[in-house]
Length: 265
Image 1 (cartoon, one colour):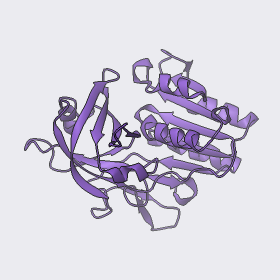
Image 2 (cartoon, one colour):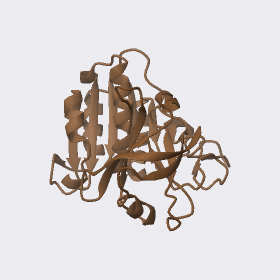
Image 3 (cartoon, helix red, strand yellow):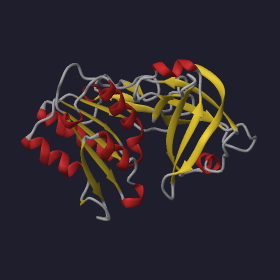
């Protein structure tokens, strides 16, 4: 875990409300695990006092050996409204990599990856890592869902990666006109997966977990949550564990959880 001031190397809008930010970072980030996150704060004297969490979207190494990370974010509050106005060359404070990431599958298997909205951010890092490890892209069905076409993120990158891509929108403006969990359930009934990975809204994650349990398929989900510290000190990002009277914390026990550890009935 490194606390540092980081320069903004690149910052671009990828949709009307979503942005991609590239930041310089400590070389130790080369060992970051897909699913881990950073806590970021803008030191301008006006931004919210507490930092905010952002999933690591990608880790890149330049030709000179410099390490940089990318994050994706949607403008939803005071902090992200400040972020959208940051220019290249400006500095932010960040700490990371934090949390528990995804456990990669061992050997060849049939994968399903389910992304809802901005939840696609850590799943690109996961997919790139598995491809680098020799995974056949055709063994992966990637389900990309969003409210509408403008919120479908990373569609071109996923196509270039060669996975079997399934696109849905709630309003029917692109792909199939349905919730992203519908084609997941349909395909899983015919071709059950060996493992499922997912990140997105809680309602979507609960549905994916339920389907995985019915199929007895291993399932790992990355939970999005508000948090104040990122290291388990404030206990503000609690989720119900499977054991009675036991709560887990997204920042330290997660954000990636084995579905069987959660008390989601």
